[in-house]
Image (tube, rainbow, N blue to C red; front, side, top):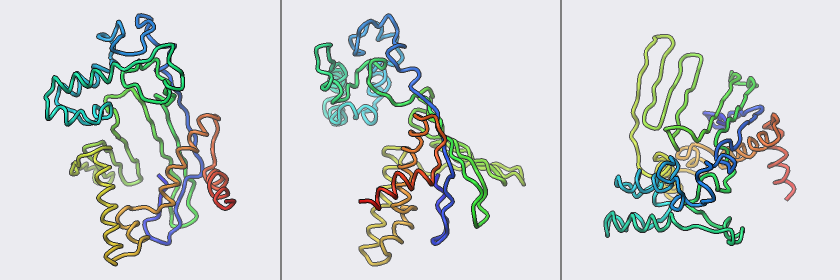
Length: 284
């Protein structure tokens, strides 16, 4: 995203500006079905059986009853995997339903309601303010050196998709294009007209195997430094693939995008980074 240089010493080609649009369109109290009444929890809701967003349907029927006690089920109760393995489905389901049934009333202090997650909470009653549809556009101008041309990147996050928590995208280049999802990568060469699909090894763990991959690379980097084979900066670049500053920049860009979204503005990335990060670091 930040176009780090391929070789050490090269100047990074960073975005010139970015903008973002989006909002919480659907999961608002004003969109709550009238038939749901005042229910704040799925298990006490009169239309739970008809509602596609029923917590019971999602966690119990779709996942646990099909043998999946991992994500997202274990987020509700971290002990659910051990319970399923040791005591069986009936005991695990009883525990999970009990957790999903935890609710609050009008008499519950607002601070207490906000202080913890309620996994069985009505999706239209939640205090979540994350956009359910958001787009971010980042724009690069022609680079000063190295022939790095102008380009645009668009990121679209949407709640309403079959690919929940999965990434998919396309990269359009001058010589071909790349299309990818969570299981395959397809390349197309404009000159030959040929397409080729690759299926990388799928690792386990969260974020599509990303958690395991990052942990593995971190251990390899630490080992290389401890064994005296590489310096810390070299090991980080070789095994992690980025510097600490680039990690901070990638996170900071999310805050810049949110500022652009809230203010309905175009944000200059170099100016934002200087004002919001570098100037504050130098002043402390």
